[in-house]
Image 1 (cartoon, helix red, strand yellow):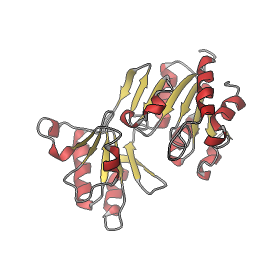
Image 2 (tube, one colour):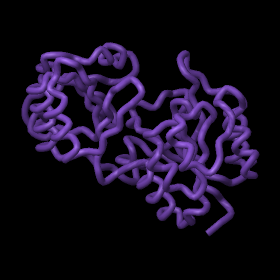
Image 3 (cartoon, rainbow, N blue to C red):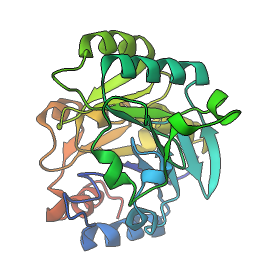
Length: 265
């Protein structure tokens, strides 16, 4: 046990402003000061590690909970990693083809898409500029018989068979619906909350020494779990009943004000 606190931050809307994405200088300074005070800082994101922007990595966080808890890194070391079984990945791709639903699939180091799908997501072209992207339909053995992914995004369409896919997805995955109506499908056994639990136990800290910062409903698992939960200004109102306190907006010194309010800086 120590006086160190464990601070967990969502990315979009918490550390990064809306497009053209930037990190407020007040947040940069406050995060550095919190680390100097002995606290450990972690990203806790639905993004896999490959999708975390360089401007976030440059802040020198102590670790990363990625892919909604399916990968955990600390001090440059991979502490936990979980992928969906290959057979489930193949079954998922097959039903997406049959239901005519565009999707892409997230791995720790790359994004996969299905070139054999009737419809490809528009986001694939944009992702090519950010991360390694591969067409899994072109895989040859042994890769075609072994590939996996950790989580995936689907993009509902009016002419797709969403009901059939929804029944399948809800049996096998945890489903989050984003503001743009995209569905984020994650592993049932892992979440942003299990990421906090893992690091809390790994570092032998107590739950009361954990703090979570977020702004949207996909942050609810960690906001509900953490000892102290902070909603950003302009957060989705649905998360507010589950938060300890609400700070100001990201562009109105939200991170700095929260860290000061709880005596962390």
